[in-house]
Length: 111
Image (cartoon, one colour):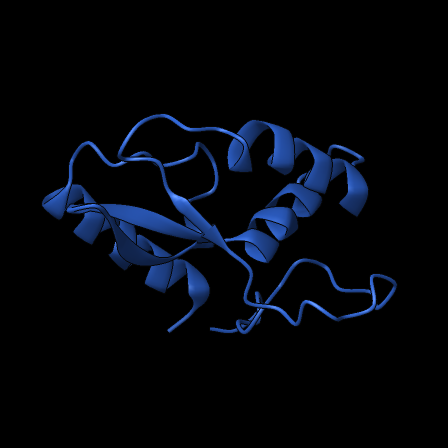
């Protein structure tokens, strides 16, 4: 199963169990789970996969640009009790100059 397949299954499940759950536009492929915010199921996004999605777009952004945009517009947003969670699955002590393209445990080319 690819990351996209998993994300699609989670997004579909979340739509069934909490139709009011917030999903960030264009970032469905970064959904890696469902968690409870109080008693409401909400999306869980992988931070590094979100960065990777922005880097894959042909907008000329650097990793720093993507991180800045995500921090200000997504992680800093609270839109009520259906606001998603954001988690980091990569090693927090990883060197920033390691060539990481935003991927985590799934290979984007995996079928």
